[in-house]
Length: 302
Image (cartoon, rainbow, N blue to C red; front, side, top):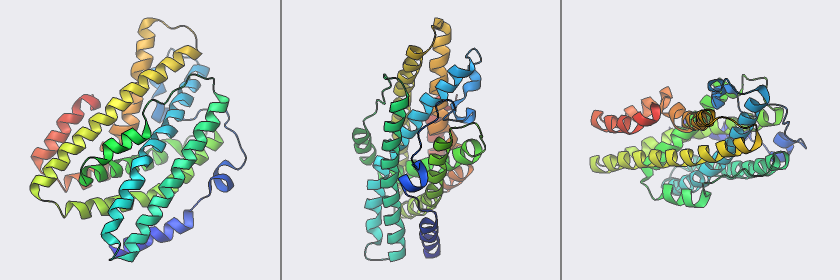
C-alpha cells in the first residue's frame, strides 16, 4: 500500500500544472465551438434544434459542468484534510500524498472560479448557478466519512470516464475548454487511486451497524445531488429559452427533460455504472445493502 501512495506522489509531481502557464496561456474561450461533447450533453435527443442552438446547449452545460466541479471540490478538500489525520504520526508517505491531493483540489477550485469569470465575459447575462458551495459542503460533510468517501470516489472515477470516453476524442470542442479538462484529469487520476485506498481503509474500521448507517448516508447524498441537478436543469433550460427562438410548450418540456437527463448521466449514472466503482462498493456491502442502494437509484436510472 505504501508503494501505491509513493507512486501517486511521483505522478503528482510529474503532471503538476499551473493555471496561467499551462492551461489558460492568455487565451479566451472560442464560442464558435462546443464546450461539452455530445456524449455528455446528450444533445442528440433534441433533433429539432439547429446547429447553433445545439452548440449553445453544450456551452450552457459546459459552464455548469465547470461550476459543479468547483462545488464538489469545496467538500473534497476539507474531507481529505480530515482523513489525512490518520497518517499524521504514522505513514508519512501516505500523509504527503493526501497533502498533495488537498493542494491540487484547492488549485482546481481556483481554476473553475477563473473559468466561470471567463465564460461570463463571452455569454449574455442571465445564467445563474443556484447551489451555494459552502452550504452544500456543510451538508455533505455532516454525513459519515464512509459515505462521503464513497461519493468522492464516485466523482473522481466519473471524471476519468468522461475524459477518456467523451472529452479527449472530440475534436470539435473549444481548445481551451478541452485543455482545462485534460490537465484536470491528469491530476484527478491520482486522486481516484487515493480515494479508493482511503475509502477501503475507513471501511475496515467500521462495525456492521456503522457501515449500514454509511449506506443510508450515501443514499441521502445521492438524493441531495439529484435535487441539485433538478434545480439547475430547470434554471439552465430557462436560460436557454431566454437566448433562443420561441419553442412550443411540448418542445420546451423536452429541452428541460434533456438537461436533467444529461445532468443525471454526468453526475450520477456514469459514476455508479463505472465498473471499478461497482467492484469497490460491491466488496464492502452485503446483498441487502446493495439492493437498498439500487432501489434508491432506480428512479434516476430510468
